[in-house]
Image 1: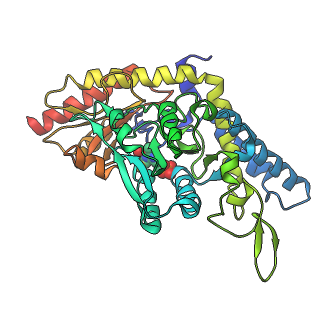
Image 2 (image 1 turned 90 degrees about the horizontal axis):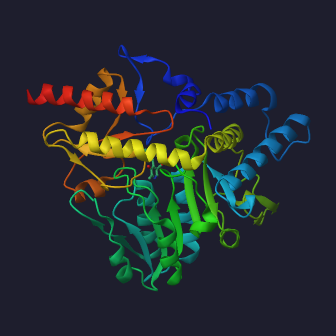
Image 3 (image 1 turned 180 degrees about the vertical axis):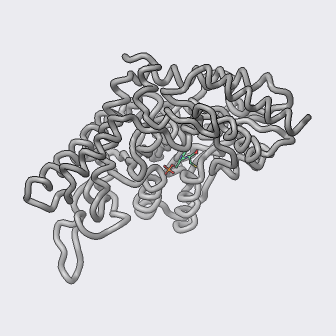
Length: 409
Ligand code: C6P
């Protein structure tokens, strides 16, 4: 494996000054930066191979089709899916979850059924279920979080009462984008399966940071975004167990996903084509395959340790600041840390950090119900990736001290 310094050199965007300071990019939870290999793959595709897929019989179209389907096989291997047909390319996590919420929920949810999710979900794994419940007459329930700063994670004991045979689907995040909590995905799937519920995992914040094996986890659906794992924006994945996918009607219809069309109606191809109507995002799917190669070349167990260690170090150092509230677990956590000062708004914190060249995120992080539950309107979040260093955490903490000095005198 290359050294962490070598890895940093792979990301051209990092080598710039912002407001007179070297860029310290700590907004990886929002989107990660892209290595040269991914950028080169996109350029190469557009310079040499660009063509529509599955439609043409000419050389470029065949090359583009091979590369696109090769990326599907590559992604399947990345998450250990049993079959490349279980990989549906989407625009990202949000679209992936919406496909399940529309296709699966439409076919299976009835009045009296329960959809279970948790109090720590991103809006993308919450609003689609609210809509699906509304449309079907099902009820939406939430697994509560434990602790004033959600330090206790999900209330796993409450699951015993919540996971009844009425629960038809359990959707949960693997790693919370605000708390950094790592949920025990395999255990949650096992317990859901015991009552016959289908499971949907939002892997947006875990996919780029750790090895992920859908067969070992035992989930039915898993959603993620390419841009949060060193890949391009505009491409994401819905993994679905083959047996389930083939029972679902498509949520979008049009070209490419049909077997036969008459003026009277149409019949559908099997998965994955059934869920990929229209011209797909060929270039970015190929870029995503290259991102998989890149992350595997670094060793994903090492990435998990690196990002988790940085987040714990940041948790410890930030906790020394006076009158700070740091959210989430006190021990092991995903590669991010969120915090709040009672007297300084997160937007001011982020603006001051930007003056120091530090890129953070401030706001509700698409977690409005969670914020309200914790009695907050917003937090500041630092999120880490393979190119971040312990020195950058010192720069972050120094920037926070400067901000507090300005506001508190
Ligand atoms: N979270 C963040 O800064 P999309 O936008 O579809 O690529 O991903 C949505 C999404 C779903 N689930 C979780 C847990 C997420 O963190 C995100 C994206 C970004 O936290 C943007 S709000």
